[in-house]
Amino acid sequence: MGTTEVRAAGSRADIWCFIRYPFIRYRDDPHWVPPLLMVEREQFDPRKNPFFEHARMNLFVAERGGEVVGRVAVIDDDNHNETHGDNLLFFGFFEAKDEEAAGALFARVEGRARELGREAVRGPVNPSMNHSAGMLIDAFDSDPYVMMPYNPPEYPRYVEAAGYRKVKDLYAWTFEHDWEVKKIGRLAERVRKRNKALVVRSVEMKRWDEELARVKDLYNRAWVRNWGFVRYTEAEFDQLAREFKMILDPELVALAEVDGELAGITVLIPDANQVFKKMRGRLLPFGVFHLLRRNRIMDRVRLPILGIAPEHRNKGLELLMIHELYGRAMAKGYRACEASWTLEDNRAMNHVIEAGGAKHYKTYRIYEKDL
Image (cartoon, rainbow, N blue to C red; front, top):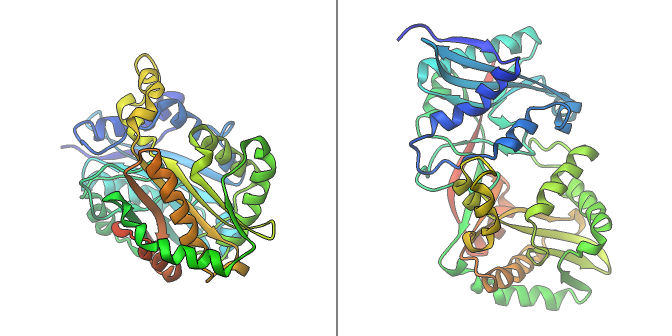
């Protein structure tokens, strides 16, 4: 087999090799969804990705006998360490052909962590908890929803063989079989009657900048106590908003207002992965055809954002917004929904989602290793 060697991916050719490797690794996997190559290039470009304003990323490629057999990114995020008082280095974008390649990659990650004086390594994050995060440890027989990771069943074994242990699990929930959400209708009606000043409305695209500013404020207040949470910078939030805007359906956003003040937000986004899977990573020459037919292809939605302002929690606003969006989504022909992700120990939110008719069906794990 030869010896696995790990080298830094510094040149344009090396970075292209890093980006292309998953297309080789998953070539026969029916559930992997190829990312758009043009978007992947921008993700690793410090000139185009605002994440690099507060973090550094080193890319590494593993080779054996002239063949690429893995990749990993080493991520040094100042904002996370300053927010949480940690001394961590993160790993992300991990792929490996086998356990030997994985071991060589993790050895390189840990060597870099020691060079920087870090006390532990945590991951995977791609490149942070505000993006795609966690390693799938179950339910490998279904396609991932948009902006959610995917990996083969052997990866958790590779990580654990290198000495990493669970630090936190992230849950994904599924609403299926006509969502089974009708049973919360009576509860939603009670919430509405108890809160006479409550209004649930769609986002107004003509007032996008104003709406976005209010959502940004609520997001930072609603998630601030969550494990691993780091505020988006202004540039990062604006980039996220631009990406969401391209696939956002205003009718699938529920803004809960009390006396005109934003109290909660719930967002459903069409599962663009159903389109990306057909595009095979490229817009041209045939990908644009699938993009134009996207409304005929997508019949699933993901619920990535469900947040309530601290002063309005425990009032059932979540149930009301879920029920409202359920009706809108069903009317548009969507037949399945994933709520993802939630922290395993966020009992209040998990209870609300479960009460809404969802089932916990996937688990993504964050690992950590002390050095």
